[in-house]
Image (cartoon, rainbow, N blue to C red; front, side, top):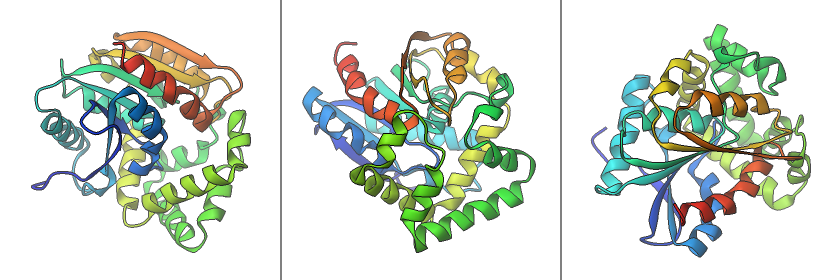
Length: 274
C-alpha cells in the first residue's frame, strides 16, 4: 500500500487521538456515535476505511499495515484504541504490532476466540461463522448476496440482521434514526468492500486465542448482559485471558449496539482522565 489509508474523523479537531475499529459488518461512519462526546471531551476519533485494503494482503501484513498507519498519524504520541464487536478482534491483533504505543484499549461488545469456549450456540450469527470456518465459498456467496440486498433494499438487510435483536437492541431497532444510520453503514460495508468484510470474518474464525498473551495495553471491557451477537461469556473470558485487563463493566438489559451507545460517553470520560 503506497498511499495512506483513508479514514473518517469525528469529535474534536486536533484533540487527544483515539482510533476506532468498526465492526464487521461495519464502516468508518459507525464512529459517528463518538462525535458529540468526542467534541465535549477534546478527543479526536479516527476510523480507517480498512475494508479498502486489498483482500490478497495476508492477515499478519494487514494488521501491520494498520499499525503503521496509526503510528504515522500519531507522530510519536501514544494513542487510545476503541474496538467494537469483531473490530475489537482487529484492534487486539493490530495492537500486537504497537508495543508500548497504546495507552488504553477499550473493547466494546467484543467477540472472543471461538475456540476458547462453547460460544457458538449462543451467537445470533452462528450459521455465518460456521460457514466462514467450514465452507468459505458458501460464506463468500452469502456475503455477496448481502451486498446485492444492501443495494436493492438496505432496510430489508437491516431488518434481516436485527430480526434476532435482544435486550436494548430491540428498542434501538425500532428507532428511525438508528435504522437510517446503520442502513447507511451496511450499504457502505457491502458496496465495493465485500472482500474486506470477508477477510475480517475469515480471520476471526481461525484460532487466535494464544495471541491474547501478547496484549500489554491497559484493557477495558464493556459488554451488554443480553448480548446475543457476542455473548456475555466472551467478555468474561477476555477479562481473564488478556494480561493487560484492568476493568470489565457489564450493562444489565443491554445487548450489542445498545452497549456501544451506552458505553461511548463513559469511554470518552475515562479517556480524559487516564
